[in-house]
Length: 266
Image (cartoon, rainbow, N blue to C red):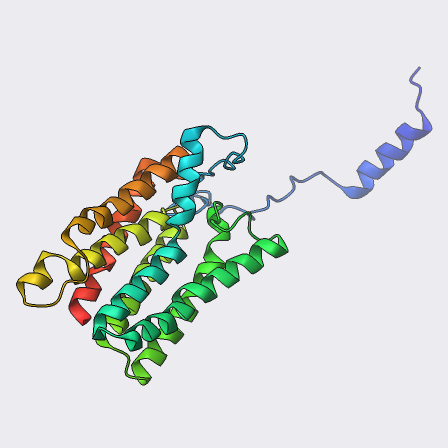
């Protein structure tokens, strides 16, 4: 004798009422006969997963790390940009008026970007003023790009000295190039600016201008120091593990190539 429970009766009646069970459709929908299943699209340029560690506190860092932090701070991009604009501005007409043009350009190329980063750090949107997290760099760099474009336009409208305008355009080219790379890879912005600085100094005050009869503002003994700037900056970034050797070299090369625009426009 077969015992049938109430639950069994309900289950059987439900199964009968609902009819034969059909397989549930998949999330991608029915597949046509002979067709291949859909594949996920893969990015041609996968984003970098490199995340630099937080730099050690100055009080607990080794002597080598302390030296690297000092080099990174002193030769930070904004400092190099401002100093270079003042130097080229003073050299453009040999007077204080050129320094004034350099300060005016530094407002858009240095002061505004620094202010944007400082505001982001204060609000907690950025980890630090060197922005070690790649994805956090895009927005400040885009705002800085708009500021430099404004500076280029105003320098042109106000008839600034050609070397100052050419330098700001070269900075604009370097910033655009660095921003494009930063979208998917963490290039060294410190070394991009350092490499561009060394190239500008060589183009403006090196052997070539002297051979052409142009005045040289830097003593010959200081030119090797200018070349040593990207070397020192790269060393500091590697010691602090902020970048890989490839990122440092790529940044230096990008800055040096972008600086060639200065030679074409001045």
